[in-house]
Image 1 (cartoon, rainbow over the protein chains, first blue to last red):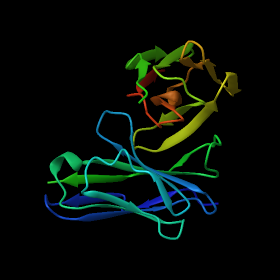
Image 2: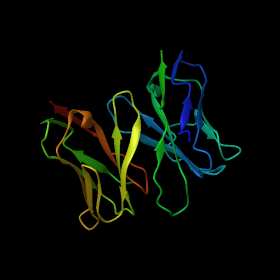
Image 3: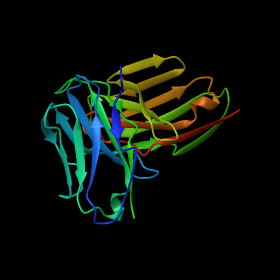
Length: 116
Length: 105
């Protein structure tokens, strides 16, 4: 079975450009998480979906960040008007269950975004 | 929000040594994740535990819920264990900054 995949793996954007990052979770996984990892730091939570519902977006750093998962499978993280401080690796993870259950998360390889 | 602290930040060991990485958190949690991140970025989940101890091969994870502390141990360390080890609280998904482990042959 395929794991979590993300595309593109690398993205270079000029400051002010919009970018869209895609995550394909493991088939059948209910929960999907997006994280941002700056160089030399641990990941930071951005947002969480249970199926198509975005249950927590408290980690999104600004209103330039938007995430969706319209059919409860593939998710897209969009960053509008990118700025240099957005440069980071964006990680996606999925897990089988949701709600109050405790489930292992499976991580994708990440998308490294560089804003010039 | 939970504050998750790890120590040490960096750790260098000789092959065969016993390794301990510590994680403490400020707010009670239902479970804690231990993750491994290799150069190149891929993250693998090692353990998810809510009490006591778990063992997988040469890796052992323990958690003390009352003391808000967890440890990851590696027995008979090997150069291929070189990676960044990260703990994260399950409730808020707050991550520690990671411990960079280098095991020398």
